[in-house]
Every structure is written in C-alpha cells, then in structure tokens.
Image 1: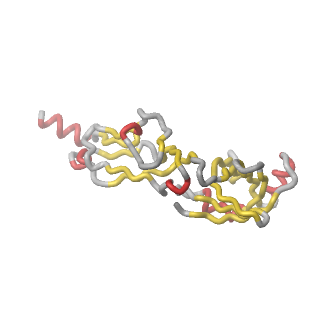
Image 2: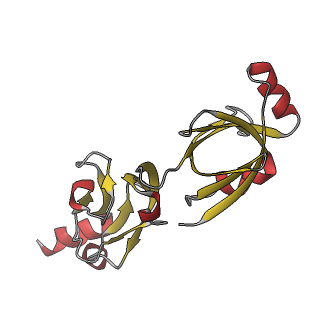
Length: 190
C-alpha cells in the first residue's frame, strides 16, 4: 500500500471559532484518534489535495510538531455548497491491531456474458474490509471471466487472504446485465 507524507502543526485553540479562523487562513483542522490521547492539528489545503481527491487509499505518515504517527484517513467533512474540505479525522495504526477501511474494487477479465452480448456492471466501487494494515492491498481484484449472462457476484462469494469483508453477504458487487440487443437476439432465436 502507498504511503502519503503529511506535515501538520499542533492546535491549542479548540472549538468552532478557532476552527473557523483556521479555515480562513487556508488551513484544515484535523484530529488524530486511536493513540494515547486525541491530537488536534492543522494541515494546509494544498497538502491534503492529493490525499482527498483520489480513489486510492493511503497509509498516512503524519508529522505533527516533530512527532511521527502512522495513520489512515477515517472521515472527511466537506462544505455543502463550496465542496471545500472542512475537517479530516485520522486513525492511528497499531502493528497488531486490525483496521477497517474501504478498498477500491477492480474487475479483471472478459466475462462470458459480455461475449454473449451482455453488459458488465460494477455495482460496488469499494468494499469495506478489516485486517492488519500491512496485509491491506491497494485494490481488490475480482476475476469475472466465468460470469455468464444475467449472473452476479455477491460479497459472500468473495474471499481474500488475511482480510475480513464487512459488507452484507447479499450485496451485489458486479453483474452481467442483458442489453436490448441481447434480448432481441434471444427473442428471434426462440
């Protein structure tokens, strides 16, 4: 998994007024949970742009006033109108403690149903998984070569080593759907 380096400065003033003044200065207020105590800090908007606006997940190496922390981004808050980042929550990673993250799904191969005229549809772009941070992959690759027309792959059918899938077992990850052309061809042959 990729690592993202982020520098921050410790915040001493807390509350709505302090957070608003931070945002006016071009900073994003952040909080780090999961350690001995909660750490409040600020980062610049430019520093987090590549972390926030990407489909990939990163292990974030925080450097806050000289101290280093290994973490993952847990939650984001955006302004409802301007879409600017208002607040970021990070969670400190421990070597032996599992973490829960959403990992992007990538489909691999040409499905049998697509060869027969169907359309492959990715229903879930990310899956929620739990595991040790060193075992987390950058993406979850699912082979769809054996997927025939009208069939689906559900979360319960998937298995990844050293990872526990937390989504509902009945959720559909991908499906090969019938197209109008495929229905027309089936009607003519019948």
